Each structure stands twice: as structure tokens, then as C-alpha cells.
Amino acid sequence: MPYGSDPMSETEPGQDPTYSYRPSLVGAAWSFRAGADLLHWTSGSDSGRIPYEHIKRVRLSYRPRSMQRHRFVTELWTHNGPKVTIISTSWKSMTELERLDGPYRDFVLALHRHLASRARSIEFIGGSNPIKFWVGVVVFAALVVGLLGIIIRAVQQEANVAALLIVGFLVVFFLQAGNYFRRNRPVRYRPDAVPPELLPNAS
View 1 (cartoon, rainbow, N blue to C red):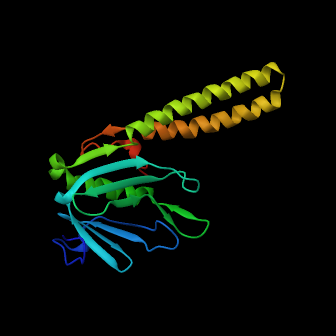
View 2: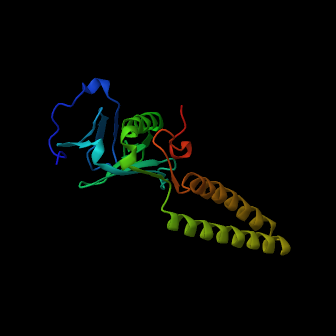
View 3: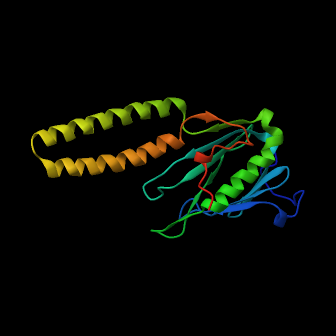
């Protein structure tokens, strides 16, 4: 299984799309190179290669976190190897994260172009798990209705300042959660038609 040492590939490295990111402060950076037939990776002293025909599933998703509000993730599953994760943000320091929107978008699209000829054997999915997604939608709707009820009650009791604060919170909550659900709607897609909501905007 060719996931160990990484010999010279079928093309010169400088001709292939590349991408690097640091998933944490304490770990090594991950670097990827999309060759004509293989995905090459390095992390610290480890390196390997994954033939495209060994990839069975690709998932694109939007996964913001507390310090990474604009964060996209690509996950690759192979038939008999570990899952590979590619993230659109990179840690620079204890308090600073770098957005890699352009390089991430370009690399993911280039990778999909390489996978297009193997599309019959690869499952391309986007967004969240359907069950988790719809449970989240129901909870989100219930919270919005509950907050609207609190706002109405506050106005009836002439607690206008409290009502305005809750309205402000509701607007921010609605925009952030609404954007999450909009981008993470479960979909299946073709490698030549990657959903734009699952990629950072082109610069």
C-alpha cells in the first residue's frame, strides 16, 4: 500500500498544484501536492502518496469554529487507508489564524479535476450529515421562535432596552446560523460542478 515513503512522482513537483496549512500550533504543518495520478502529502518527517483510484469518498463542508469563523474542510476517505483532511485556515500564533481562501479554493478545484476521470468509483458529497443537519434546523427554528416570544413579552412589559438587546442577539444569531445551514445543506455533486457555497469566494 503506497501510503509510506514518497518516491519521485510522474510529474515534476513544480508543475503540480500544492497547498499547505498548519492544523494546530503544536503539530507539524501538512503539505499536499496533486500530481496527475497521485495525491502526495507530507507532515513533518512523514510523507506518503495516495493513488486517486484508491479514494472512495470526498466530502466538502463549511465548519466555522470559535476562532475560525470562515473555515472550510475537505475530507478524503480511501479504501484501505486513513482519512485525509484539508482545511482552509492555518495557525500562525497563539492568537492568530490565517485564512487561506484563495490557495485552498484553487487546490480543491484542481484536485477535483484530477478526480473527474475516476468519478464513477468516487462518492462526492457536500454539507453536513443529513440527520444532523435536519435536527439542527429544527433546533434552530425552535430557538428563533422562542426568542421572538421573549421579545414580544418584553415589549408588552415595556422593557424596551431588553427587547432591543434580544433583537440584536437574534439578528446576529440568525445571520451566523442561517449562513451555516445554507452552506451545509446535504448534497451530492459532480466533480466538474463543485457547489460554490462549499468553497471560499474567489478573490
